[in-house]
Amino acid sequence: VQLVESGGGLVQAGGSLTLSCVASGNLYNDYAVGWFRQTPGKEREGVSCISRTEGDTYYIDSVKGRFTISSDNAKHTVYLQMNNLKPEDTAEYYCAATVGGLGYYCSGGRFVGRRGGSEYDYWGQGTQVTVSS
Image (cartoon, rainbow, N blue to C red):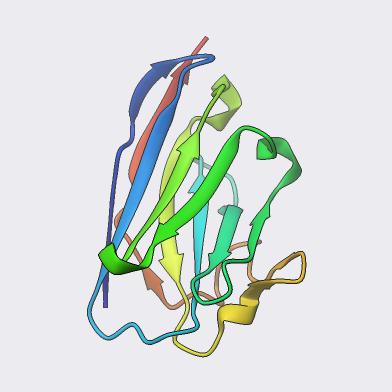
């Protein structure tokens, strides 16, 4: 399984970016995809997730109302639309996926593995998002 992120860049505060995560390989149904971010010296944190089968989503409080996660199952792609970006959103962003059958990792108002992401099996290479003030 391979995950490839794209869409990062440099943007001014208040601007927008859309990150894409394209999956390939033997990803079976009913898995969860999470977007995580990390800055130097800090633990990786999950900011949003989506259940690919049920479509459940989750957002951490600091991005609610600004970020939107969505998926295009036909294209095996998950997006993270980021609006009204703030300097504190600056980080390396990663998408990650669970193995099949674990779609419930993102359901019922939960994001299993949000802290650190150890429960997620497949990771992309990351894309840098820098927000200038």
